[in-house]
Length: 161
Image (cartoon, rainbow, N blue to C red):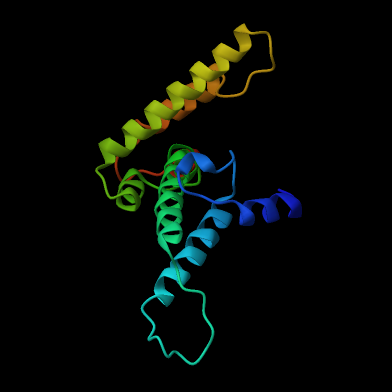
């Protein structure tokens, strides 16, 4: 995103998660969240604090809440594709499950749902006559094949055979 987009984002007043434009980088969201948090922290400084500081207000608290929610949503939106990438890069289901703080079967469900959604996306766009994005039949099958790996088995180990 451009420098102007960054400046516009920094000037944006956030009170609800939907106040953010689409595709705002996670790093920008976290930075703005931190700025509001810093001002709120300054409220706890003594009244005679020797340095000039900006003290937070209700707007900062609301912005921090809304930004926290957008950060959560953004991170969750990356989750399925990152599970897929981790497995493609040699992680095991046990490692993925540990990273997600869930069971390997719950992690498998994340990948299955993602793969099916990507396949559906591809088919929908293809029916509209546009260049499809999402998973081809082969990519869908490859993703589902990863769900068949044993908990401690790596896709990289499969390639070595």
